[in-house]
Length: 90
Image (cartoon, rainbow, N blue to C red; front, side, top):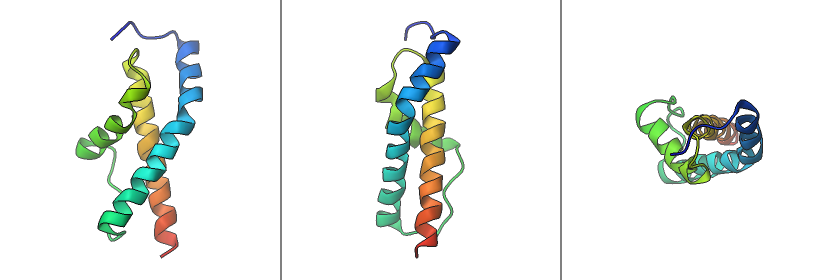
């Protein structure tokens, strides 16, 4: 991996990539709900859930590990948000 981006470039990359990570998070929540139902709360960002979120966004950024981490956290947060919305519609 290359050296990390400057702070302004970091923020710009997040601004550009967040819509895609959020869409991926929403799709992730829908897929889990379709396969397993909505009986359990969305997991915390740790362990397998963090690895799964990271797997969903790692293709978006190969240069800066900070960006991958921020995108994975955002993907997970939007999956949790979508999960909550799906649960309200039951």
